[in-house]
Length: 207
Image 1 (cartoon, rainbow, N blue to C red):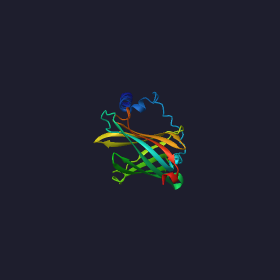
Image 2 (image 1 turned 90 degrees about the horizontal axis):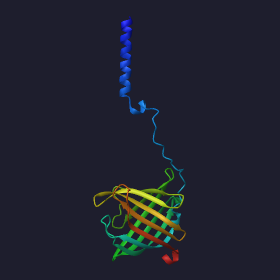
Image 3 (image 1 turned 120 degrees about the vertical axis):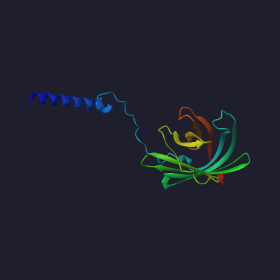
Image 4 (image 1 turned 60 degrees about the vertical axis):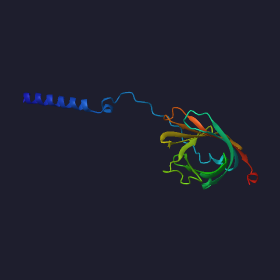
């Protein structure tokens, strides 16, 4: 009986050792130091953050001629836009027109607020590409407490994957500033390629 008991004890120790050796790292090191949790700021109600856009605007635009090619050549032109709200401000529709280098351009931006995520989704279409992109992938983001809005998505530019960023800033009751930028390296560096500065006009002047 003592021999049997000794053999049983040895088997128990051997099995326990095997279990310990094969156990996942998080089981073996339950007391090990862990990375700190991300401090997520409280979500704010941003459903009226685009209210400043409602109405008619005169827009001055600057466009980088060649994107992500080391070019610093820009062209400048002027345009107009009219933005109208829907869903009590939880969405709006902007119609944009300009003439650039003899080409008439008409565009449309639809912005929709998600009260669950507290984020906006921005969709763009033009008269020459009315399908809102294929597949439909919106720019998504929000405004911070300082009134700066940042929106992102991932797209292909000439077959290359880039991150696209919109920034709205310098917002007053009668003006606003917008920039679009591309990042070819996962957000490490950014190249601005589109800038707009807009000034409010009265509806009568717009007509």
